[in-house]
Length: 482
Image 1 (cartoon, one colour):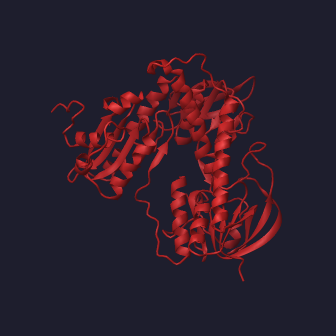
Image 2 (cartoon, one colour):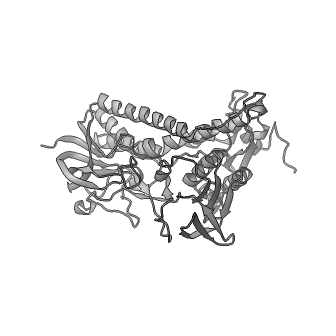
Image 3 (cartoon, rainbow, N blue to C red):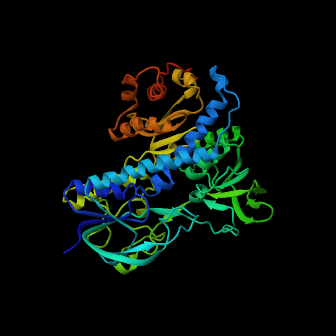
């Protein structure tokens, strides 16, 4: 007889959510996790970076206190204090997840799971961190087996790990990934960030705020290349104004050591950059090492991500996969929704995952958030579209807030005005994007957004203002010249 109805391998935002939902559905649930509950998101990603970014934001705000009529002398930051605050937040949240698992009757097994059958695993002890002392154990190798456990069904939720670039010198001391950045005990004087997507742009924004001399190297022609082209261009201009050197259309060809790290950048902006630290913020790969997937016959794609259907089933009966390990969308909130869906399916409910509306946020300064189609993608599909834009500089609340950089851009159908995509760069973009996601999910139009009364003065009314502009009826900016 199996030990559990369901065994979840991995306790990140997909795994722990799936375990809780399955327990709520009446299943007996076991969860295998290498380190603290919460996975990369709570321990080494979403939460700790945002805690540190908030410290950087407060430092910048206090430094500019005079702009608000407030006197603040001798403003400085304590990086050890920043890290201590981050650690406290992480502990509070991971302890909270552990309490929730316990409250829902989930049995947590500490260790590394290795498949010995389709629904049977060995739980192994875990070795030391491969990143730095006290660092993440989620990528650490298993050692000796502790016990075997079996279940009727298994969910694989082991997430992803940072990818290493095949660059000469990428293994030198001082060349780190986003995980390794948490091991820094002081702010680097000179930092080169390889990759200008969300991860790289966030770290660049953070360390620049604390005084690092930052260079960002991005192989594409703009930063955050998955975002709307105008958003990427706006972020590039914003970072440049903050003193960050942005080298787009460029690639790091090699890294050499000496008195400092010498980064050889090729392309139209070719140069050699000196750095104390090089942060690789490019790409992630599935965390499936030592899981024993081959022995079970689980199918993966060319990059190693596990293939699943819209009910998160793998090609092996009773085995499901969720989160980053599926490669569908490497976002914590997607993993959580996949976890809920998989748990419901296993409990006998007719659930399916719907990827039609996936918002994303990048916590640079200014923030970026988006959902739906970009203008470029919509036109590439042959859709006839109109764009509606409104700047934060024309918004009363943004003026009082002291954050007027950026804009909202809505992509809508030309004939019916249906909202196809919403793209924001500016204050609280990550919060404001919820209206855009809901608009797309409910098939709302520009007319409906414009006719909805928004509270004033708020940042949220920018959606209404943008919709009015798209309809050719702007109130708080001058109309386009006909």
